[in-house]
Length: 406
Image (cartoon, rainbow, N blue to C red; front, side):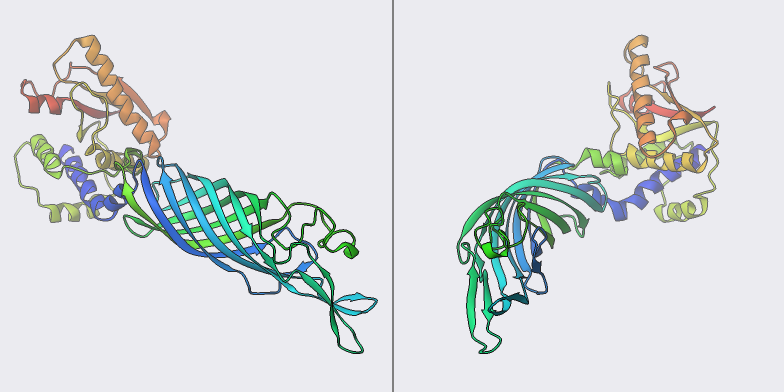
């Protein structure tokens, strides 16, 4: 049984390496990114207007700073072209009124805060909020009247903001998704709602009531601030990264593994030294997975600790992943996780240290989905040494974890 679990441990490393290692290294503790793409903007907080026009388009660029796996901030600039038709087919005493298409070219700059909900996945949902400034210049904010008899066209009213530049603050709230397409590249989709600090982006300040007074005191018939939305589709390129995320290594169970060390560990546990045939191992795993039997004593080959440490090493993650998978496939099995130390140090200190090692493994298995009620942790200290020799290698293998079925 010990040999079977040794083989499964190495196999887990090999199978995970081919499709997951790049994903693990693509998430860093901190990073810088550059983004660009298309934007589709549209008015939402306006009244008395028809949006039967296709004049909605734009683009954006951004610089993003990821402060951690979950939190980022960015500076974003965008160009947005929007349009709407107001008071089409209006009738007055002089004839037939026509509301023109009021167009607006908006240039925006935003400072946003981003929170990623699941940064270690190939796709990550995020929430974005922030503030910004909106420079815009509405054009053609005019209502004409056409005489039904002569066909003569005359201006009935013109907004004070027509062809005038103005600035306004805006508040941003949105959500989106990033999809990994490479180690450094992401596809980014986002939808954001903007509330303006004024009511001028549509060409008329509806709060003043003095632009088109004969329409009842307001061009829109309302008195709230303007609002608009946009949808982004673009690319994000991470051009600078810090250290690979240890959080995501813990979450995914994938790490940069010293395969020579793992192979040496397996050989150490074998009763007869043998060369490792990796192709044969893969074949055996395909046959054995799902049919594994859990022995009363289960030595986690490869889960060893540095001297005086209770921190999981990189090569332990895939082995613990395999252990978690077996426990999840055998829900009837409860285990005691026993931590061990080498022979250096007092009994009291080693008992405490070995318990911490067992607790570290228990915490990891719970994070991988194993019910906490099935797991208990115990520290055995230095009382059950596997190797009596005092050399450094033997002491390293003594600093281990075992499962005992209860």
